[in-house]
Length: 347
Image (tube, rainbow, N blue to C red; front, side):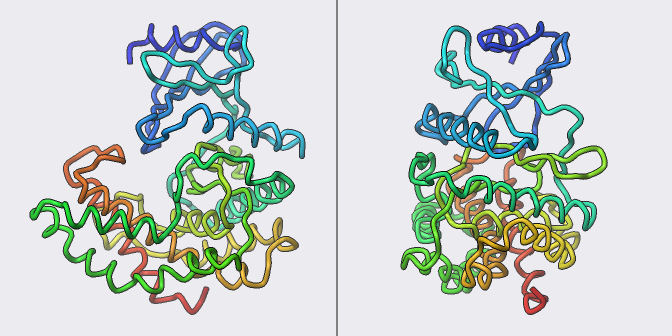
């Protein structure tokens, strides 16, 4: 987008300082996100929410603001804060049929796309433990399901089967190896979903997108807070724990095409789990604890399944940078499962 358009949208919010420049942040798959520099100490992050993916953006933003305010009331730790528009208590505007919201930029912070060491894994685990602890007294049923069945494995299998039935022959052939892999793992990958459906796992507030790039760290790698609350909803802790380890324990980027570069970092798993339980051990049930290792495998699988489904659907959901990007992402995730399986007993 042109800078004058970004500046106009930014100036609809109750911010401090004057607009100096903007820079697009390219880490996300779904939304368009821009860093806004001002002439004061306060900088911002402006985000356009993808309303083709999120069908009720006002409710999504309501979820984010509710949880942000709740977290602010619980501790003095760094928290993601949202900014109202001018002369209103709303936290979004609609411009050219697009929804925009504004957050305060958290200064002197950094993110990782790949975890470099045990310390970062440990700190990320503490961040999730803190998030779940601080939201434990928030009624999860007050949150709107911004993406119904987001981590519902049965629903994701149904989506995959629909995509499989309608896919082009060329794409089916390219995905053949991984389709066979999906068939092999199906029964095991439904274990946690079945237990949830049987009400054997507690429903809690969950973040639902806990990859390491949604964790903020200080310059010396201390955890600050979790960001990207777009998918905060009711769920089970295995969604969050498993998805976090999916990214933290992968030695490669999510779309690395050299599959030899992909390994499962067992030591990162244990570092993250240690940090997580340091903050959350008093709240976790015995069954939840028992299922933590399986949750990692399950969440790696569901992400691979979603990438492959989107590939078979001709790339309708995720942003792609080249023709077979989603296939490469899926291959990456299923390869990570293969690496995990060789040491699963150690988890």
